[in-house]
Image 1 (cartoon, rainbow, N blue to C red):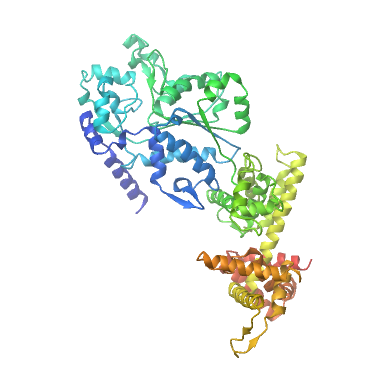
Image 2 (spheres, rainbow, N blue to C red):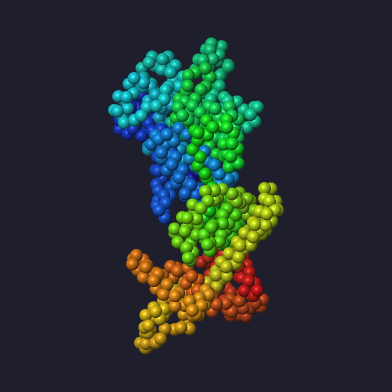
Length: 631
């Protein structure tokens, strides 16, 4: 399909969504399915649930957020379950403002934007259909036409709850246009749209001297006063404030706590009673989810002011910390780069990971657990197994600090520094060293970093560099072995056969000759020495491996090469040691002979085909690892 065919198809689909009928016909729709009459809070929760969920490590992950929000599963689960789900069930939290509070660039605005865009899409589906009184400036629920005295019977018949009153405009139109005949009132299906100001309102604070409360609640149309004769005539009022237009959907307050107090007073009755005051009218009903976001400094300043206690009691504060997983942080940077015009520049493998390691280290707090340093903690948070620590230790660390992730380097700073590396002239590719160098140079320009923080952050850059060095060496050494994984597994199986025979005082049978032999002590020790297992400790280590194998067997799981971190490390180091001289000579020689050149070309091709390198960064990696091995 070309672009005009897609536009035609989109317009046709939009026309199919149009529906206009009488209030009587709307009631018939509700008799078949009462969901169109759900509240704004229920609509948001239904929208999130409609995308589905999945269970990961005992935690619920909502697919609605997974394309944009990374590493905030705990915060998102709490947000959905404790606020959206509870509010959808009409619990009292729906009468609270949802305040997302967290550090800059932590994802607060992204969450709100996703909710707004999601509501727009959801209202175009049958499950998310929204019906409103035709011509109502607030697109209000048609059931408000039912007189209060009759609502109990109607609620039982339809299986719905009716809350709220007709807006002043619809009250007048019911009298003047329809002669009080509610069954004839026209109802239409509407699509929630931020651009068209239907079901979504946004308020951003500006200069208190120039900003008017009319931005929220609408204003008198002075050009019509002479025609209608009174400021209390609905026809002389513009119901076009953000609170009016957000009815049936979502109202966003950007940097809410920076707003002048008079703009927040309207929220007191809106949150608790579901109505607000505008002009010379009675209270106007509104069904909308109020969501605000602010940073921690503004929030602390707000709660320290006693005058704000009434509003504070009407808030549900949801902390939105920084992501604390390296692999998820990589996704953030990758997403931001993909949105730019710099996609043509190749980014070498592990470059974004190195930046992510630095970022996460700045956000973590030292654990009180013995033997746990920041690097081990970082690995455990990222889902890696760390020898000597269990799942219970991870949960304990996650609950150690309530404010972990509320400070540190923000993703915007990192992506700015990556951008500075990407924008250099005549650049085909950037690698991890380019990124780390850019991060280091940027610390001098960062306005809010103290001298002490700078020293600490420089140390984290050094740690990230060491992590990259290890990754680079492994990458090259694996590339030198055509089937590294196969070689590692063969050595692994051989080691297991030998330790099993050793612990059981048994012999090993040679597969070729059938001859029975003693366990190969030399082989076992050559592996164990790689991770510092002493002669005295070898028996305990071997028995511990067999116990682990037995435990896996009882649980119906297979004990393999990746099941024991220390043993895997020992196997890899053994293979790398055997390879080291070949790698060292091949990568560092300035005048390679024919055999070395052939090997270099094979390794370069393998790096490009299997690991995502380009010719530039593959050659740079070879030279860099050569220099590391020669130190």
